[in-house]
Length: 214
Ligand code: ADP
Ligand code: ADP
Ligand code: ZN
Image 1: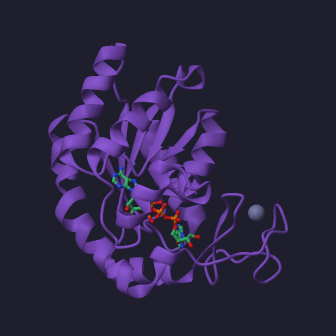
Image 2: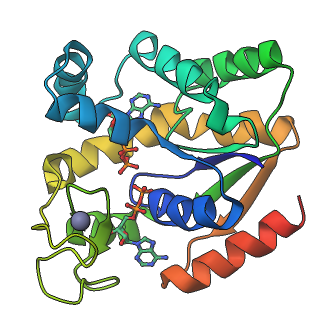
C-alpha cells in the first residue's frame, strides 16, 4: 500500500498513520518528524527548517523533496509506505509523481482527513507530545498519568508551533498552499475523503473502510 495522508495540521494524520503503519507493516514517513529530529540534533537542515517551522510557514521545497526521495528509496519501503505531511504543495506533488514514475511505481491512494478549522484549533491546543514520538491529547487521548508518556515514561510537552499564534498561520498556510492538492489528486482519481470523527477509534474505522475499497 502506497499511501499519502492529506489534511490540515491537527487533522489526525500522524495518529492514523501510526495505526496504519502497524496494521499494514509499512513505514510511516513524516516530514515534520524528520525536521524535528534534525532540529534536535542541530544539523544544518534542522537550523534552516526551524526558521520556517517556528513561523508556521512551509520549509522550502528544495529542502524537503530530496529527503523524501531518499527515504522512499530505502529497502523498507519496497512493500509500501505512508507519507504523512508530504506533499504539501502542488510542486511537491508533481515532484513526487516524477520520483515514483522513475521508480516504476505509483500511489494507491491519497486519503484526505477533513476536519473543520474550529476543531483543529482545539486539537492543536490540547496536543502533547513525547520525545519518543508518541502523541497525546489532554482531553481526547490523555496519557494514563498526567504529563507522562505511557510507553517511555518521558515528560510530555507542547510543540512550540502548537501555540495559538503559530496555529493560525499554519492554518492559513494550509488553506493557501496545501488545499489545492485536493483538486490535484481528485483529478488523478486517487483521492478518498473521510470526515475526521470526534474519536480516534471512529476515525480509524472510517479510514479502514475507505482503504478497503482501494
Ligand atoms: P496531524 O498529524 O494531522 O497534525 P495528530 O495526529 O497529531 O494530527 O492529531 C492532532 C491532535 O488531535 C493530537 O493531540 C491527537 O491526539 C488528537 N486527535 C487525533 N485524532 C483525533 C480524533 N479523531 N478525535 C479527537 N482527537 C484526535
Ligand atoms: P502538522 O501535521 O501538525 O502540521 P507536521 O509535523 O507535519 O505538523 O509539520 C510541522 C512543520 O514542518 C510544518 O508546519 C512545516 O513548517 C514543516 N513541514 C512538514 N512537512 C513539510 C513539507 N512537506 N513541506 C514543507 N514544510 C513541511
Ligand atoms: Zn514517550
